[in-house]
Image (cartoon, rainbow, N blue to C red; front, top):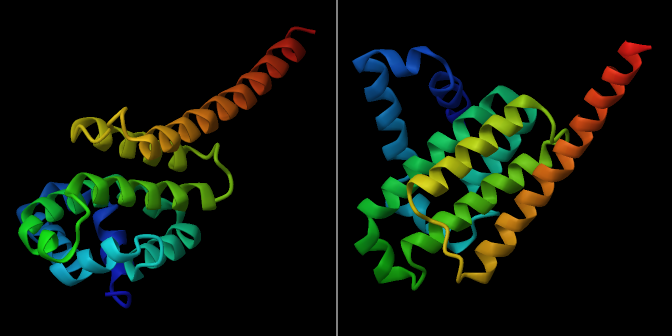
Length: 177
């Protein structure tokens, strides 16, 4: 998996991966290989230390354009968990909702590890991840862990907006003088 994921991630991050039937087949085959039952079990056992998350962390740091693949991968992960729910439920007590939020948390950790939280790619990826959370109805306000996780993200967003706002204000004030 780790020896070819770089090329596959580069492929699915390109515009061409959305256009043709062949490209869709390549993308879907990669998802099937990436999220097979064994991979899902590894992720469920330790999402932050799974080979997939470690590989994503490595490539996202060295090739920031690959951050755009995180929302796609999260949606594909959720679909794979739903498809293989029976296999996973026989091994783990964790439900598919909790697994999806663990994967979301791992993706957010990758984004935080990039360093410059104001970079467009990071924010587009974060927005895409939150859109998947919303589309899949993953947020449960009664789950304290999810509330804490999303409050941290809101804090990060506010911090970034305050920083960006002050830069624009500074530029505006100095442009007028």
